Length: 323
Image 1 (cartoon, rainbow, N blue to C red):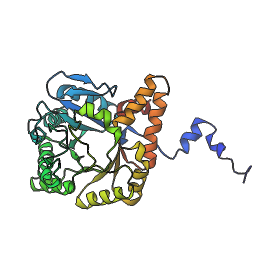
Image 2: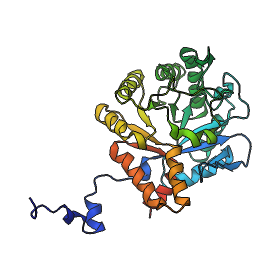
Image 3: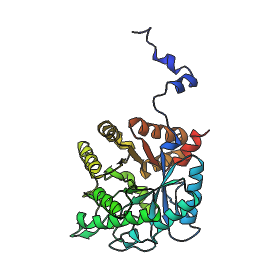
């Protein structure tokens, strides 16, 4: 009882606050997403995501080197191909943009851990995450293409593959393909609980992946559902996922916490484009302290239970943490 119990005693100064802090961030927690495109010397800023770029492989190497120098251990690659078609054939082209970028980055920075996004939406002319039949994505027909894409990434030297499509059974299909072709040690980080979210808006400019009709509600999760996330995660773990991801992060901290409490596997969370752009926009208007809000957002994701955070803030946050 007061005055015996005075919690403020442990908030007196920064030293004691740091000593008793329950949640800490490190550059080791971050995975830095990169958008790789065709060509050479290409570095085009994404208007809705200040500080993020569509980059050719040579520029992506430079960006990845900077991230590595800051202590960030990993990058996640998204691809923007030169040509798109209904079946997204560029996704599994062994000379594709992601495949070439993987080789270039691993040659230049062997110690950097390279993860590849496995999905069809950046590569299809219609912008959806698989083969279209009767106006919707055909789940089972899409699995073969996702497996081919993941396998092409592994052959290029990817350290890990990360399927983001939300097709039922895709983790098992990819695991079997990798194992059958001699890549049993390539892990899978599944976008296990990926919601149909308005927070993806800026990303669709960056990845040029806006659906040409409809939306992705028939395969991504309903944002109102909480229990369903545990079912999705359980299925992916059963199929062989090594790491499970919740996406988005900031509006789904309860889901991150639920997954952390219920599964004994590493949990990743994606601090997505809309969350990033909101902070950037408010900072440009002078309404917030960008650095403080960035660190508070990332700390909240870690506090909720994420072991790994995919974030466009990775380099900026690492610079703060390295001071």
